[in-house]
Image 1: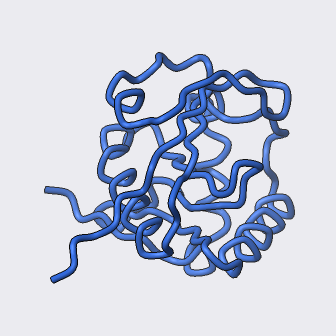
Image 2 (image 1 turned 90 degrees about the vertical axis):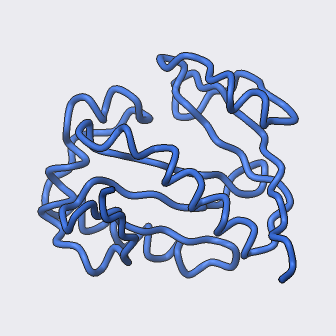
Length: 158
């Protein structure tokens, strides 16, 4: 089992994030944006730290066995809050574990619903569609997405 760790973005070297965010396989599944440079990635980190400070939001870098593998978070969205998962190609198999962590965080924050936008280049995920109370196409930053509206389950009291 791989050691999955979620750390604040300001605990990660910006240059490591720069390399991650400019990976071609990863960029194919994101909204269109220019390649990052040193100044751009530092600005992006500051933006995400500001999001992390908002009520009901959390943004973290993902390390696997000590190595940067991506980032994830709960961020504001037109529908309330959205889940974001961005993983390097090598870490794509960890998406379900990251998703479960995000849903736990959403429950911790008391969110009733969250949305999860997946770029239209990806297949519709039947397991997500079964979990969703609504699935529809959407457009963000000029790209088509499949948007899943997910109810957040409350933890069972102990």
